Image (tube, rainbow, N blue to C red; front, side, top):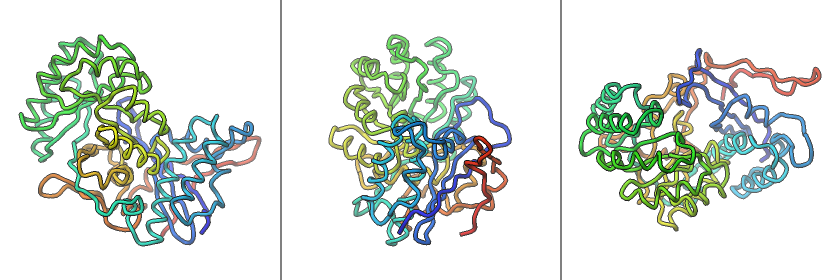
Length: 394
């Protein structure tokens, strides 16, 4: 079969704020091939990603992603890898290309799974999918009391693990941050798995990050995520050498397998977090999951948006039974909640199982999300390169 159409749907909440919440908008990708439809989701600026798909060619190494996708043969996973190599070469100077391709790539796996009646994780070579332990992924409150209240609510909702991130962390003193960490621990309880996400706040300032380590050890934080810029590998390694029981986590900023490998090999992280909507899709993420397992590093998904993205992000390490923790968007905006008609829900033990249905196993509720559609028209010299479509019934 051949890739016939690729459609992008830009969704957004009525009001977008500066909070570090990536569920305020979304870019869904609908691909049709051989009479089958697959869905994916890009994790980046929607308009920029659309532009990377349709932008006029600047030169031979800066071609639009569309030139490498539409009309291509799609019969096996090797075809997805082949298209990815073409994009990597022909769009090497188009820096948004991996983000744009990521959503398309997910949709192609979804189609292949539907074509053979198998879930994507089985196409990736896993015989079975292990249950994962989801952690509630939320933002710190503006005050320790707000963080305490959030943590209590998470515990009441029977999550066994939680991650608190961004917010005021790193913007005040180490003592201020310590108060936030203690509030999170108190609310979560002594047995809950507590994870901390600094959101790259310290750039490459190792001393500033190290000043928080005593407090993190005191609350028995399982990891400190993204203390530095995603590519500040020297800073990661320096902090990792002294962090002790508080392992470092990072990798969501990796836009290709090389950056992810560097985060492991040079950054010395204990947890590698990969976002399928950024790294180039499910295939590259699987490569890193295998690499991490060989290196004794724990693979974790990065997902803060919809359950379509959640399903895609779980596929690459579905069968890795020793890599059980997973990010779970606990309080996304209503837009992200409405995307999946059949979300991935926790069981009585607080764990989740990957869909066993063909493809990614997620049904898109086009009726529910129509109200979030953003009207987009991109034109150059009077010629329309992109115009929004309404959802197509499937």
